[in-house]
Length: 108
Length: 117
Image 1 (tube, rainbow over the protein chains, first blue to last red):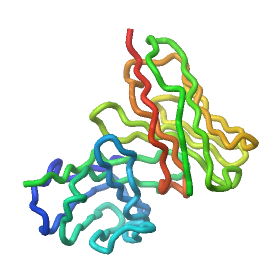
Image 2: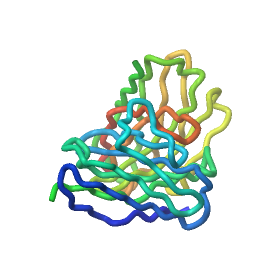
Image 3: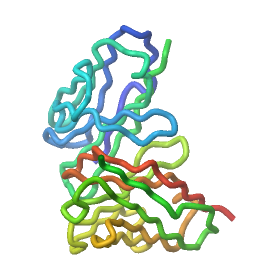
Image 4: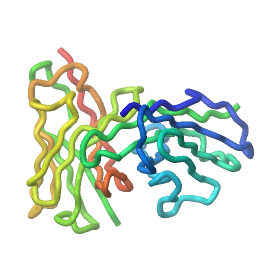
């Protein structure tokens, strides 16, 4: 299953709303997760099963969608939110898990 | 707290071999599924391999099947990845991750493998 993320880069200012998209080549039901990665760090799980926030993740992060179309929304960007975001599907777990190509959220 | 520490990365020539290790602590390793995930320099994430709790079931990405072998030693709280016949395209940071049914809440810091002549 191919996951296509858009846009490739999102240029926004702190306080603005960020909307990131992930589209699957076939249905993944709700088995989609979102990760944040900063330079030199391992990815951090933000959202699992499309809309569930992982432990310790602030409420400004929310996920939605099902089947083939998913969205990660950051309601009001904080300085620490500028990073790369990846979506990932697990419908065929424990095999053939795939990640999207990433969306970079940069400071405008 | 959960801690995963990878080691064993380095520079290796094409066709060579390398064995990565991942030392786990802060959770019951023997009750946990584990996976390896890699990231080529400046690129995205790629799932590499999965192992179940008892080492009975393993899966690999097509890109590494037949060349990589995942294993674990529950007595030593350790995960391994034996990588043979390495290619330039295997150059990446390799992360071990605790596999929560395909959700990865815990990752190591990664170890860099560079395949180059």
